[in-house]
Length: 195
Image (cartoon, rainbow, N blue to C red; front, side):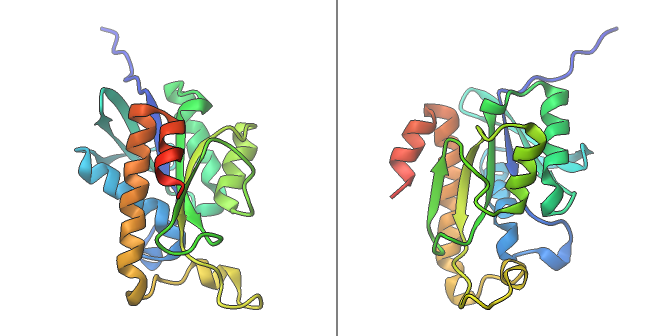
């Protein structure tokens, strides 16, 4: 008996670092946003493969692979390429969620494609895919308090309590933006959420 492997219309990737140490840090905004997508759309992260935890959900009429790389941020591309290759998901149907220090807390930005903008996770994905035409939803975590502040310490720091409400709103918007992309297209999502 031959079993056909499942087919997916889209792959949605949340970027972050695995482990309790990194929970609720700025750099794990992508993990937190994809958790909201899973919760809202009946998905769960119940499989381990591709150096990731992953699962699936349905958004509208589309079957969606949801994935959290466990390679640590700077090596995210390995997981993304492995899963996309295995399930034959084209680059044009990959959506990546990640933190952005150039956006204030509470803001998101939807992009059709572009450079990595200094983000090591998206940089690794672009390099290993050999393509920068990856849809992305950037989640604002705010700028460093001053230019001398260590970037690594900033992104690995936790969102302060007084910003948590705005940050949660951004995570909700990010999950809605992904749904909009899948249901109505990237242009509709950019028009609706790039305020």
